[in-house]
Amino acid sequence: MIFHPPILALVLASLISALTVLWAAWFALRVLRHWQPSSGHALQINMEKRTYLVSTALAFVLLLELASLLLFVSNADQMSVMFVGAMCAVGTLNVNAYGIPALLLKLAVFFVALVWLVINQIDNKAPDYPFTKLKYAILLLLAPLVVVAAGTQLTYFLNLETDTITSCCSLAFIPEGGGVAAELSSMPPKPALILLFGGLAAMVLLGLLAMRFRVAQALYGLASAVFFVISITAIVSVISSYIYEQPHHHCPFDVIKPQFDYIGYWMYLPLFTATGIGMAAGILGLRRTPDSMADSFARLMKKRIAISLGLYLLFGLVALVAILKSNLILIG
Amino acid sequence: MIELDNVSKVYNEGRANEVFALRDITLQIRADQTTVLKGPSGSGKTTLLTLIGCLSRPTVGRIHLEGKMVSGLPEKFMTEIRREKFGFVFQRFNLVRGLTVLENVMLPAYPLGLKYSTLRDNAERLLGDVEIADKAGMKVENLSGGEAQRVAIARALINNPDYVIADEPTANLDTRLVGEFLKIVEKLRTEGKSVIITSHDPRIWQADVVDRVIGMEDGRVIEDGIAAT
Image (cartoon, rainbow over all chains, first blue to last red):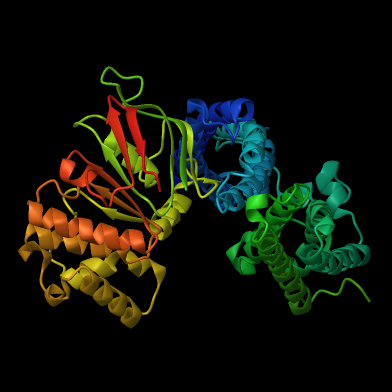
């Protein structure tokens, strides 16, 4: 293991998160088995008292998990100078077999955590805990993810050897290579851009409908997940090429480097956050409006969908600016 | 109407020093009545009062206020209920030293976001109602016991609560001041407010202004004298 301050911070953060979610998961099991808002039983009252503490602690560690994904990626990028063959985060993550799985698990944690945080925020605005069971059910999905992500990340860090020769992103993200990276890279520019901006227009339309009609909210959640895949495909296959001004360079990690004005962060942060909020809106859209929130629920959902839409538009704008600023001609 | 349904309160639950402060209390407290909780020290009067006033939560049982369950509300909603529905007069009055009489009375209304001038007018009117308007600019540490009590009552009324809760309000007062306190209670009753008082002072629970006396002992209700009204 390399004793690098970001690595120690990431290990510490994941340890705190894993312990907290395990503690909270034990509480979640009790809530799912015994939660009865109408009951005046001591167990119910005790759970009502504790849920505020548990959800506050969880909110803290899940925010930590969101930040930890950023640190994980930026640290992988910065550490690339230590490994022969690595030129960006891809090389660092490929130093051993645990890097990419750790990243994917942290991505999964990011989305589920964001969904949990949004639902928790809405739940806290009602006097009668309308989504408490739902959020603790989601926590039971999240807890193993956080623990496995922490374990995989630790294994990855423990197996980092500086004398390893790794592979650079130019080998991973080429259409001729194998796997998902090659599939993403091989999409032709025109259909990728049509899908991206057509998809964005569809998201805006669906978002506006979801702000008015309950039935469209669940669709918006589903569409958020689909649009995320479309967006990542577009970033890898075409937008990255525009940013690097090289038709055959498709790395989705180099875009976070300072020489590209950290544009990757400007694309990924809005895209990821919009997707998480959109998915949470979709899940809540499937639920009945609580009586206690008859006046406020629609307004709260509208606000979150508007935030999600705003972030998608920001992502689209950044991608568009990257294309328009580029000297590369891929279409025409 | 405040309804308590099989309410118990245990302090230090599960520990060696566990105390059963209230045991299985079922009560209904009507609005626009003056209710006195009487009983010896340690009988559970103050604990019951804190539960009624949403200052603490029961260990078992539910409390409903005007048909809505309040005992299980998340803390921020409890705070809103306390601020909007209840006014509190504490045994030691709990006035904030260093502030003037007027400032003390205005204090609980600040979070409501009223204009300062409206707030000041309301506070001055209440000080007039309890006949202590002439002391508005005085620091509270310079007040006598009776004066401090009247300031505490004015402060309890600043948010125009439906329920005024007073914990042993006459514990350290002479007979004349007890009489003055009862006059204020009478006035509140005529305004349609519900006044709930804990007291082991017979001058309070034998007063004409009291509609109902609930006797307590060892955390249980042992007597409930509902007035004919």
